[in-house]
Every structure is written in C-alpha cells, then in structure tokens.
Image 1: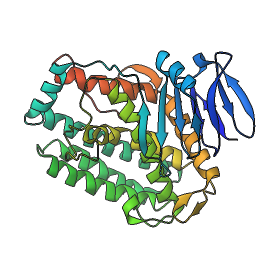
Image 2: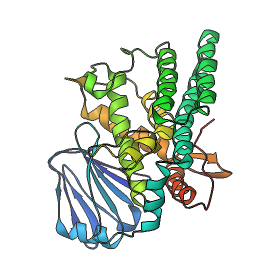
Image 3: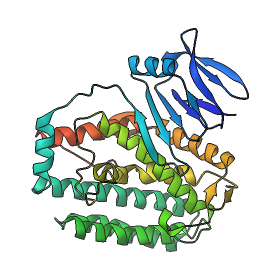
Amino acid sequence: MVFTVFAMKLIVDGYGVFVGIKNGMILIRGDEEREIPVGNVEQVVITTKGVSISSAFLRIAFKNNLDVIVLDSNGSPLGRFMPFMKKANVKVRKEQYKAQEDERGAFLARSFARGKIMNQYYLLKSIAKNRKRKDVLELCYGIKERAERVSEFNTPERIIQEEAKAAEMYWEGIAEFYEFEGRKKRYDNPTDPLNVMLNYGYSVLMSYVWLALELTCLDVYAGFLHAENPKRPALVVDLMEEFRQPVVDRAVFRVRNAEVKDGKLSAKTRRELMLEIQRRLNTKVTFENRKLPIEYHMYLQARRIERFLLGKGRYSPFILR
C-alpha cells in the first residue's frame, strides 16, 4: 500500500505517488489508483519523499480547510500548506508574552510537567499491575512524588529538573518490560527499535500538537516550560508533554517485530507505527467530563491555554488514568 485512510486522515507513504483531483474527488495514483471524496478527508500527511501534488489538489484543499502536512524521514514536521489568510488576535499574544514573566506562566509550566509525569505514572503502573511486578510499583510511587513536588517550584529550570528525575524512573521501569538501550534521543543516534520508534513517534506527535496550536492565536515559539529557540517551537514542545504517553508510548508498545536499518525505521514499521498513533489519536477518552477522541482533547487543550491567558477559563493538564 502507498497510502492509508484512517479516521478522516489520508497518510501518503509511497514513493512516486501522485495526489491530484479527478471528477471533483481526491485522486491517489501509485501502484494502484483510488478516488476519495473530499468530504471524507480532514488532513493529508505525506511521510516520504517522491510524492507529487497537483495545484488543483491544493486549491481544493485550501477551499475546504483541508490540512496538508509534510514530514521528513524522521517523522518531524517540515511544513504545512495553509491558506494565505490566517486569523489573528493581538491581545492573546500580548497576554502570552506578559505571562512568561508572571505567575500564569509558572502555573502553565507546572501544569505541562505535572501532566507528563502523571501520565508516566499511570501508564507504568498499569503495565506493572498487569505483569504483577510489585517492585516496579515502587518506582511508580516515586514518579508520583515527583509530580507532587513540581507544584513547589516557580522556575522552568527547577521544574524541568524534577521532570527529568521522574522520566529517569519511568524509563527504568519500562526497561523491565521492553528491551532497549535506555532512553536515547535522536542526537544520541540510537539503533534499538524502541528508541527509534519513540523518536519517530514524538516527531509525528509534534506535527499534530503544532497544528492544534496554529488553529489558535497563540505564538507557538513563546513557551513557558521550555527555553525559546528559533529552531524549535517552545509552546508546541510544552503542550506535547501531556500527550507523549497517552499517544506515542502506548502506540509504540503495541508494535511488534519492528525493523530498523541504519538507525531508521523500515517502511513497513513506519506504516504500522503511524497507524497505531492514529488509533490512539482516535481513541475516545473522558477528560473534563467530555468523552472525545484524544486528538480533539489536544485541540481543546490548545484553546484552553488561550482562554486561560485571557482570564476566561482555567487550565488543567491532560492526564489519562
């Protein structure tokens, strides 16, 4: 297969595929040809090079608010096709920049970190209980203590230190159930399948969180927990923290017989992982008394940040128990 349609997303992952328009429908042509109604697709994700897109398709995409996202070979978002006009609200950004220097910013930083730590706690606890490993449960309680300690700090540096200690315990626990070299990020050049899948999955997750924030009036480069960097959207990385375990980790742990060559996933493994991530994003869970797909909660969290900064609502981190 050179493409997959899942939960109103068209994932194109075949070299030499053409995406165009035929009879008012999206045309996908590769080793097979298929026409898809425009109304059946909300987003097109291109995960490989060698894909051709017609201007007719882009016109239809713009008119129907259909997002087109391009990822690099590591799963990182390279770009997004979007209409020329984008809504703006100067007041939101002014409040966002002010909040970086006041208690609102510190509160959001603590919320993002606490959300990540508690999601680590609940996921590891669930695995340990299913495998009947009481020794790993002790690690879980240590992780939970770190989440409670986060509320004591007001600086991003100190909050990140606690988050890092919790992460160390989390990955120590995960290593009891899954074979890998210990958590290694992309710049560490890991070769084991679990780390390569995690890094790829987190990059894919970034593209979805980035889109959720782009649909607000927030500045994606002005964060509260992570340091500003012109090459990294700090607010995207902030909000991502709440969704790493609920989306990516749970998806990665379901992939079996992953194939890695020269530090990169095979096309087969990449496709399988993308489908698992889509399943997680489409999984309905209850948060804030609303049962919705996780992806919808992601969009709502982005809007809640906006409303919180304007003094129109509260903010609670997304935690999946």
